[in-house]
Amino acid sequence: MSARAESVLAPLDVAAVRAEFPLLSRTVHGKPLIYFDSANTAQKPSAVIEAVDRFYRTSNANVSRAVHQLGAEATAAYEETRSKLARFLNAPSRDEIVLTSGTTQAINLVAYSFALPRLAPGDEIVTTMMEHHANIVPWQLVCERTGAKLKVAPINERGELLVDRFVELLTPKVKLAAVTHVSNVLGTINPIAELARHARRRGIPLMVDGSQAAPHLPVDVQALGCDFYAITGHKLFGPTGTGALWARREILRDMPPFFGGGEMIREVSFEGTTFADPPHRFEAGTPNIAGFVGLGAALDYVESLGRERMAAYEHELLGHATAALKAVPGLRIIGEAPHKATVISFLIEGVHGHDLATLLDHEGVAVRSGHHCAHPLMAFFGVPATVRASLSIYNTREEVDRFIEAIDRVRKLLV
Ligand code: PLP
Image 1 (tube, rainbow, N blue to C red):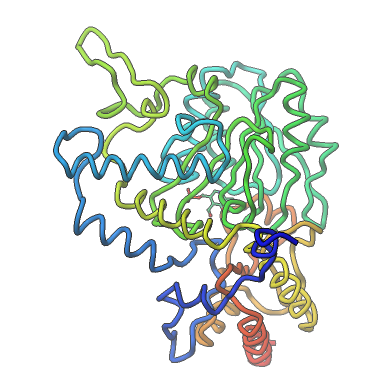
Image 2 (spheres, rainbow, N blue to C red; image 1 turned 180 degrees about the horizontal axis):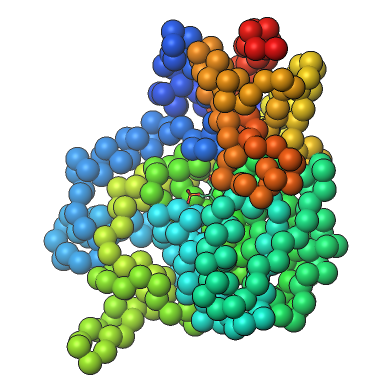
């Protein structure tokens, strides 16, 4: 085996990873914190915190406007993150990366700038039953404005997309399909490359919500064959208010601006305005510059660990956590697809999710309970809410075991 292959396969040193995340050493209600809410937002490594701090201490200035040294440094740092994102997603060009405040803004950009001008009454957009509201509501809004319809591809009880049914919906009326790569509730990893092949064969653009995939899986937009891919920085160990939309160059070129303002124009007069080329055409106003500097550091951090290595560690952790949870009496896991990321939703018979999450918090365990911005999915499973444990590279088997002990203690109080 080559030295490179060996180093790729060397297991993740989780103790070293944990040491990079200062917040993980705090206590909550007098107990060591067990942070199992990374699908909501991930904790930040020192490299990210320090990059943001350093930017404000040494290089703070606005981007793309000033000729002075600070302006040049800020612009270079901000633009460097665009290049890093292009490499991270294996985009063919950094000009195909639009920097956004997160996935929500990225999807809305596609809805208003790409879909809205193309939709007519009777047209359709296809999505799936397992989407986050961010990948439902923008499509509903543009459908309402145009008379188009939103069609929903079903899932099965294990939480897998029914690919045949998805493909059946791809009729000539469909102007766009929008699918999550990884479900934020079920953890299901959707077969995006397969869906993209079907969509492409029919000339239908495919938008992928990659919010929950990018923190867990290597993402290669060229290999996936989709047309749009959205990510959010804060789930990827970066600052809040950062994210990106990747779209094919020829698609971006034909999209009109969504927001107007500074930074996105070529020339403005009261007779008319001409716009900058993509991606700047879609980046009106002063962005979250320090945030993107931090996101650049987060991408470096992820690359330094190796995404295959991270995924292998998480796969092992998921297996351990799933088996341990299944052994808890009365516990039902919602989402049992064979290909999953480290997101586990569950319910315990006779126990209200909020009560469980509140008592777990008093044990130092942070899990989320609620509908997870996925009302239609909750309705499909016939539940108002679930408890969700979402794990990351900094979590350990020992934490899972302590979590299960905490659930046992809490169950005795509640059942
Ligand atoms: N899509 C999915 C699958 C998500 O899990 C989330 C966040 O929870 C979003 C979209 C929205 O991300 P943001 O609020 O960062 O834009």
